[in-house]
Image (spheres, rainbow, N blue to C red):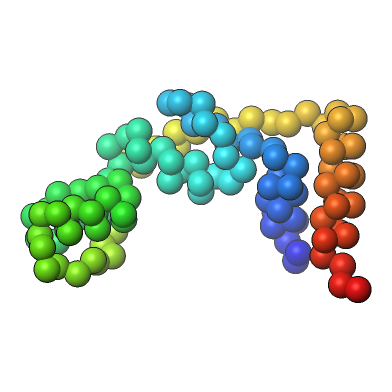
Amino acid sequence: FNQKGSLDRHMRLHMGITPFVCKFCGKKYTRKDQLEYHIRGHTDDKPFRCEICGKCFPFQGTLNQHLRKNHPGVTEVRNRVESPDRTEAFVEQKVDNDASASEAMDSSMEIHAMSNTSD
């Protein structure tokens, strides 16, 4: 990894560390972007707009379903509008660097290193 942040994200994945928590339902994620995507389901943030009727949706897939159901024959389109009132709706939990976390990291590193070693 050429950046510390990339290595940190990679290690959180292997160690199961989920510092990003949804304030609405408590679901946890290893990456901030995953949480931001999830939160759209709880809020009025609907950045995908139907070009035909103007209705907005929180996810590209939901817009595509709408197009298939309500506008037959229209191909799926990618149309994202930015919401000016987007808010940070997450809580970042800090993980204590205790002995058990350190041991878990050592174990994860050993397994990961062995799985990426070619014979």
